[in-house]
View 1 (cartoon, rainbow, N blue to C red):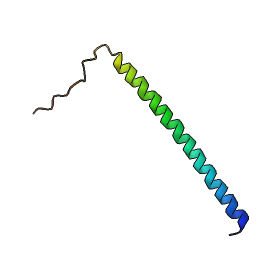
View 2 (cartoon, rainbow, N blue to C red):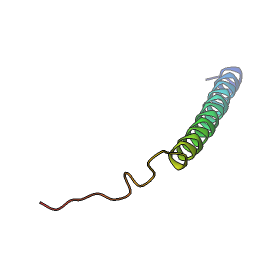
View 3 (cartoon, rainbow, N blue to C red):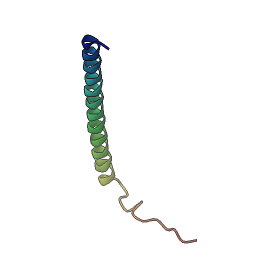
View 4 (tube, rainbow, N blue to C red):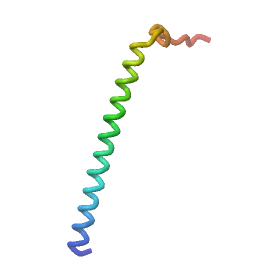
Length: 58
């Protein structure tokens, strides 16, 4: 493999890694925003006592 091909291959790999990292960062931010929204919705629930405990006796 010559130097030019190796250089292009490394640059392409680096770009793929950077794009993957950016997409993952956006996904994590979106998930965090959605979880905050869900938390706020649950706090404003009309019946906040529901779902506070689970009866698991048989």
